[in-house]
Image (cartoon, rainbow, N blue to C red; front, side):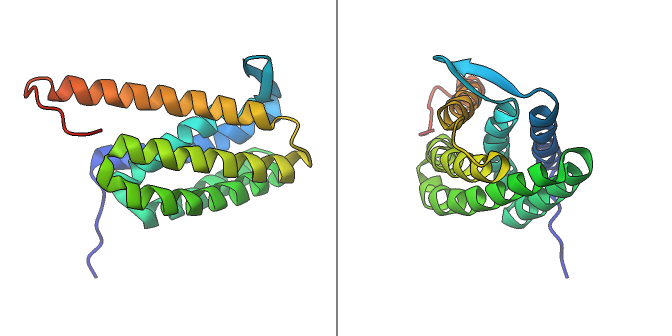
Length: 179
């Protein structure tokens, strides 16, 4: 049996992705709610989850679907031991459903470019994650607008950085392929 091992950049992205899962749950547990703009608040983990959505897509590019599913499981186990177990379970359920929906949107759009696929799939994933997590963790949707806004900020910021890096890398050729 041949096992494909991701390159160091893929491994680093997977590790960063895995770290965002318990980091988000620890932030919710120990920090509480934070402002996200326009008068909305969200549980503090919102920024880590927004980053996780982008890292998940980058890790999938580098390591594949199976690695991402294993990373979700590992991140959940780590969360279970570091954060409130009920919070870790809500997070795992939300990640699993959001990941499935993300796959359904990301895969067909990938041919149009990484950034297009990321933007569309993260839009679907962040809404699904927010709805499921808030219902399971808090039993309400009081923070729904803040959750969506905070995750959207992180997604848009990360995509802007990735586009900047892509343009910088390709500026020598002066021919930019579609993002």
